[in-house]
Length: 207
Image (tube, rainbow, N blue to C red; front, top):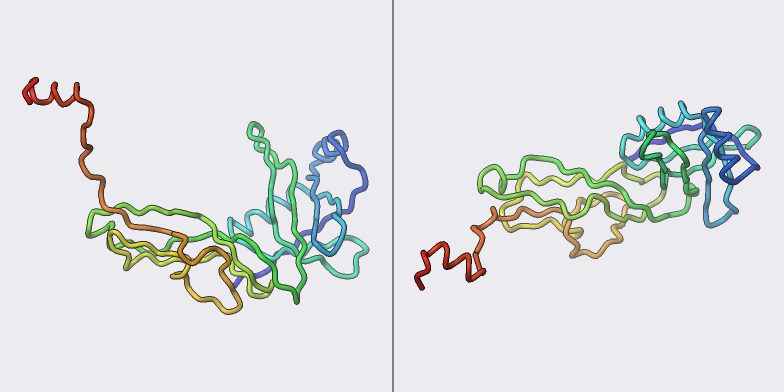
């Protein structure tokens, strides 16, 4: 199950493009914390602290404790979305979703493929990952960083579906049971030529 990470944040009042630009000029990232029980809270985060957090999370789902000066206790959250400049690669904005310790919530977590597929290794198959995330429902304390799927015994023409994912304590899969996660496909067959001109050329014009 996932552990938690800590992040120091500051409340901010000013909004808009100009205010966000000024924050970025002093190495701060504008952010927002939202939840179903409270109004959205506008935040700013030190850029270096945020980069350290992303390295710690490293593509997994993790509970993040947001500490604000003057607050009685940290807010529990997870990182919902990060906006990044495609040219400069700078972080532009971060969205956090607030959660509560005793309340179940839904979230998408990454799928991690483990093992060497026998269908690929021994049967000439091709491994196809149908989805890289699955949606689950759980309490914060039961949040898995990722769902690990072992494909070692997967043969050609077999599929691991949501119904075949590992059972985890306190975790409910919310996607349809028949939804495909990963399949081992047979190697590509020789292409059939349907074009009459191509057939004539291949046969020397003979029928």
